[in-house]
Image 1: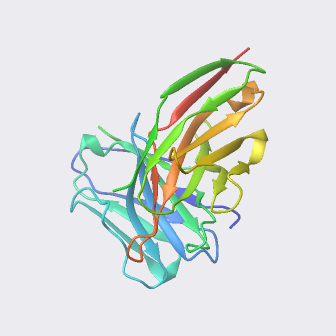
Image 2: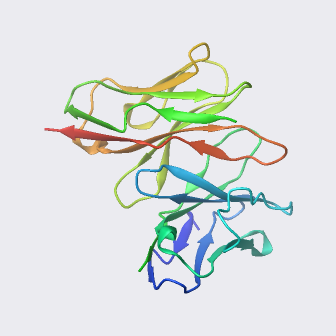
Image 3: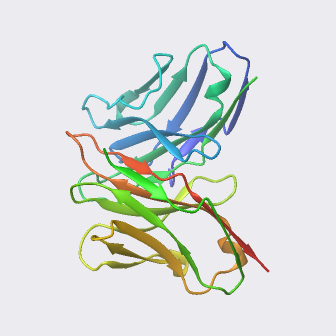
Length: 115
Length: 115
């Protein structure tokens, strides 16, 4: 597609439930990133996928968070047993060049509210 | 560890006035620097980037930024702002680390342009 697509755009879930957030990157982009944006906190790195390499999971805040990227394209971020502190906007970005700093293209995000 | 500090969380200005949004970073090696803008309920859009070469970088919408290595700063400027520039602005630094590459963001500066 023309841009990075994320779904759903909004998600309200009950505490303790699992949620899945989807990211469809720009076609051909080999790098994919997930960030979390909390109110007044800027963007927090979660995970990075590059081609077939092992992902960099160093930003995942707990073992309740996991992500996968199938076929080098679509990615799913899963949060198990959601907590209220998980409420945030989850942003996905993709990039075609990682060695020469072309920057990322971001999706519009998924706003997650845990009640 | 590298970090990014945006010194002002909020900047109110009047239309047609000049504006400077400040950004300082900490890193002991060369970095790539970025400014992103986020309009309400949207993802992040790249304004400009510094990779190498000229320290004055021009971006979209009339914005520019100057890389100052000695002061480790990358301040964003616009000589005359419009109402439509009201948004949140994020400074970011990218440094490849051990094969993984990610952007580290500041906490953002909310620019409000008043008539």
